[in-house]
Amino acid sequence: MSIKTNQDNIARIGKDIAGLEKKLADESKKELDKTKQINLIDKSITKNTSLSSLKSKQSQMIRIQGDLAKIAKTKADLTKKIADKKSQELKYQQQLDRDLRSERTKTEQADKRRRQEELNHHRQITYELQKQKSLSTDININKTITSQKKYDFFISHASEDKEGFVRLLADRLSDLGLSIWYDEFQLKIGDSLRRSIDEGLKNSKYGIVVLSTAFFNKNWTQYELDGLVTKEMNGVKVILPIWHKVSKDEVIQYSPTLADKVALNSSIMSISDIAKELRELVN
View 1 (cartoon, rainbow, N blue to C red):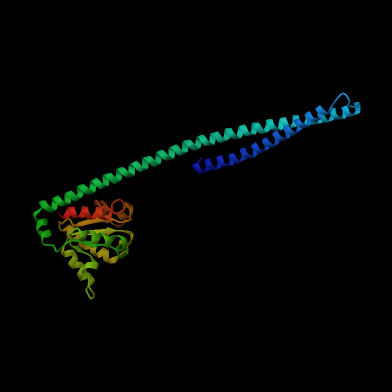
View 2 (view 1 turned 90 degrees about the vertical axis):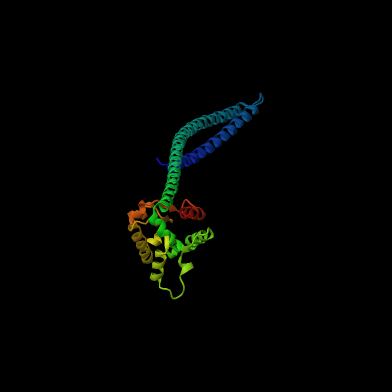
């Protein structure tokens, strides 16, 4: 039985109990009124009361006592019904308490798993970035290639992600002293988009790929990504994925290879933190 069903049952029974208790209160008032009537009749009987009047008063008292007996029976029935309803209410409440505890436990366990996954993911990111930094430092061919690059990063992204994320990231990287190939910084009126992208790819040490739903639907971003993949196939590790509002399943569907790469994630990291992680790679 669901939590909602238990709550509905408790609310329904609560209304039933309230209705029964009102009826019980009404019967108690009737009982009090009848008792007062008997007392008044009894007090009205004196030594001067005539025989006919006495018989009439006694008949009234007998009738009222009959009414009191019926009221007592009704009250007993109502009291039993109230007790039964309260017993049902208690059972539903106990079940609700168990369900709520179970739900809280599940939520706490899920939160704990999520926090652990985020921690593990962050540790893996740090490890991978340190590994990439070490590789770029230790391998002479990579040192030679990167030292000749004009830009530290090429940002491949969908235009829909520019506002609110990519532009802020590019500005933050520039503030940290890094050189960025980013269309708003580099493209001028009349430039060939394909030729400019080729130049950006050729002259950048690393390619930041902002993976999003919009990115997966773009031809130009696919062209940029193909260029970065070609560079990696030549032995140079350059692709740095950032997951932006996408799940691992979505990335796997788009590119299983990219899904295997340790990625930064805008859902659990601020733009400033992402920029600092990227700066560490270059430095």
